[in-house]
Length: 395
Ligand SMILES: NC(=O)C1=CN([C@@H]2O[C@H](COP(=O)(O)OP(=O)(O)OC[C@H]3O[C@@H](n4cnc5c(N)ncnc54)[C@H](O)[C@@H]3O)[C@@H](O)[C@H]2O)C=CC1
Ligand SMILES: O=C(O)C(=O)COP(=O)(O)O
Image (cartoon, rainbow, N blue to C red; front, side, top):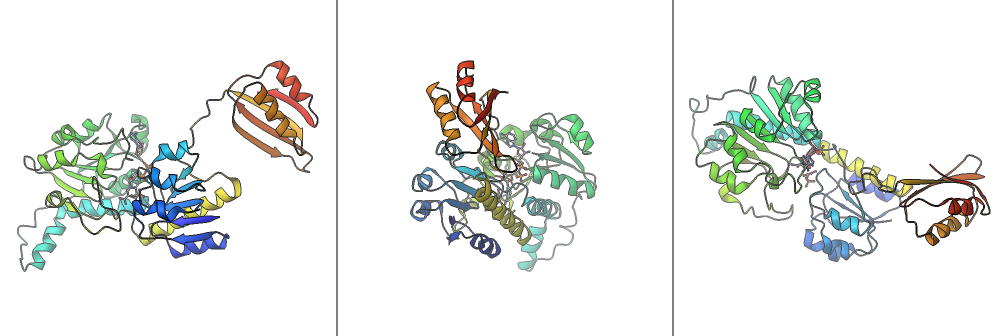
């Protein structure tokens, strides 16, 4: 098993993978453009934010699994991976505590002007009077966009801090929000209008790109806070910069549209940086999160090695469209299933999924095949009467 790790992963995870017998190549400083040269005969690629595009996959004929050592998979061309039959898996929820911690940190930093306080001190300025004007977070309304692993954790901490927490999330219902002690916003715009602080925790996709657009920003309360630790693409940063000239929003960002890769050294959006409190996409960068992610990566590789299916697949089809389940009970002999497949091929019936389980003792087995068309009684009889078949039936 050959593994390429094209980002920083903990030494313990590397050791655990090597102990499994894998040959591991470490390229912690690789950029997206380096991947085609590095792939060689790697079967598994492990990345953090390094982009995995068509060129990388085209250069890797042995590649069968890409593991995102993190949560967001918008950096991987999922459509192309699916078209080439390459599994993509991630580590859901494993860095959520770290991102929630940074989000709460940004919220407090905005409220108390911690960054400006500190800059003034470094410049020899003492301004106790000027900085003694925080509103405080207790009793304020926090609106969370996206109640996944991170959004849920941010909500829980904010509730403990005495904030009123409300949320919009695509599958959130009023009832579910009530059970969680949260206010329910039927639309993102409702949330924009009624929140003192908006915190974004959505996955990036075509649906969520620029979900926080000019009209959302215009709808936000005067002097509201906006915090984005999810993905830069969710906020229209051009609209954000414009709105800052007419409205006194306070903004904290960890992620940016077109942000530099981890190995790059220049931040191009300096104009935006003047208007915000910013961190360098470090939401997941705590030792606790790195350890939890590394453990999960090892589990994903183990699951893939032992069953051929990775834990946490993100590009498997949700549900097979095949409507016909053919159940074949048979004796556990060489060539039995090959004959069944031949019969189905001759009838022009496609098999979409197939699973064979052996009974204790190893004498008999049952194979379930999901088919895209109904086999006729003639074919069922033909299969049932084959050597070493006990019975074939449709379920
Ligand atoms: N700053 C950082 O270092 C980190 C950033 N992230 C970002 O935060 C995002 C959220 O992370 P988790 O909460 O762990 O993920 P999650 O998968 O638990 O939650 C994702 C949320 O996005 C929503 N969502 C997904 N697709 C959507 C769509 N098409 N339309 C509307 N809503 C949609 C889901 O309903 C859910 O509320 C990640 O996708 C990632 O981009 C995650 C970890 C670290
Ligand atoms: O897990 C995620 O989605 C992240 O954004 C974390 O990014 P990173 O692995 O720290 O480059």
